[in-house]
Image (cartoon, rainbow, N blue to C red; front, top):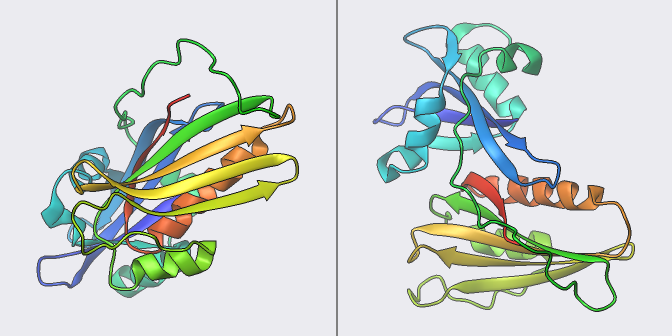
Length: 224
């Protein structure tokens, strides 16, 4: 689950937003469900409308801060004096999924990278603004040389990382997309064996690491 602290226009704590991606068997996103708690209402309810707004209204980005469950629990206790409900209870508050835009149809299976059984390409899409030091923090965590300057509007690719997990190979690029209005983490997965669990683990870990720098994930699309 993804937790967000919600603040009012003056920066004071206002509530919580809890979200969860619904994933297909290939680890791409097929929907987003969410629940919210507002101190004025004092109850949990479906927050699908809020989740949609968070991803399209820049004024709302500044009022939403990604957090871990521990941070969410601390805020919840400070606002209402109770323990944060368990994840099973929170899921019962989820409403109708927010369905992301459909990715390009996979009409044929492209040639795999030589030496591998299958090649997949995913894009994890984010909105928001990287805080000062956010790009450097990702570069340090991923051991990624930062090759692009955030101060240059025309720069798209900011860094590339390559990893091996057993016989599988992975590569991801952090780039600005939609004329700089969003961020994309383009992940290429070269799979040698018949299992793909490492793909799901990697996509989840990368999403978490970028969330920790303040960006908000929108969807995980598969392009091939």
